[in-house]
Length: 428
Ligand SMILES: [Zn+2]
Image (cartoon, rainbow, N blue to C red):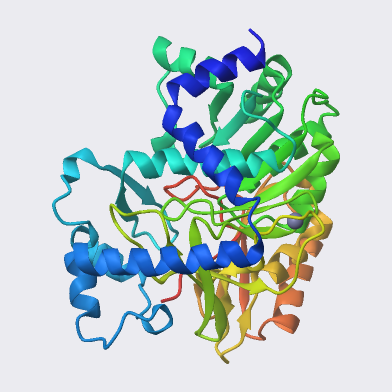
């Protein structure tokens, strides 16, 4: 079946999604000024809606003299956990809503409600992002998905839907060498146009292909990396091995489609879906988001723990959507010392650069103010001298009293959402 025919069937199956995609594509033809004016209207709209229709925001904003967006209080994760049900729009039957959850290495998952409209809009938004690579609806996508909750069953109906949708999802929650080999075979037999998945999983697959001198089919035109920080070394490795461009997507379960990279490697913020600002919190420029589209459970001025900021200027790609940059780390990835120093995760990633070739997975975990555990999954444990060197560098560059303990587990456990974190602080 040609991809055009499949696409025609898919459109019939998901009329709402493709209607929304048409709308999103139309927004790309607006000017920056038109987009920002539309965003401001929608921001006022969702704030007013939340105030009028949810018990939580009604109470939270009751004492304010007006609903000026910039003066509204920030919404923190712990507040969502405590007030989740009061954030849901009154008179909506919760049993008809969908629930999603985020993992989070802090151990407390955040759950939230959304409706079918939001779900279709999320898929449409992802399609628009993919189109930046030259992909067109109906062309095949192979997803490597870590979170258990999203993996559909293997019923005949589901397989038929996957076939028509030209999409396949590989459960990549955990894997062995044999599975990596199996995935490479799937890439060859399925011949996808795009790969999509967590940066750590795709990078590991790329390393496996590289180490074993395997190849990938020439059908690939893009790799979409999502849900985790994408490090420069992962991007280089993937672009070399998959022989196509890597596009970083920025979004989360609770607020999808925040931004996506274009062919020029710049992150464009989808102002027709979110309002993004950064606020100085704990010495960082923290990202604060308002979803313009989730009316079942509004998220207004939500601080999601990431750092980053909007950038001035235009991109050569011609997209009217404004640019942003990520601050690499999430707030709880910072390593702290007894003397109040905070060390960025990129330092720890660079520390292993020379030895990376043999390391399949790694994770630095700060246990106490004076102790970091480095977990390494590798077939060749570091020799005594390399271990000593690492310890010496950390003492010299991070803190004199910092002890580094190196462990060699068979596998590093992912967080409950399937994400892999490279640097985790257990302080606080
Ligand atoms: Zn661009």
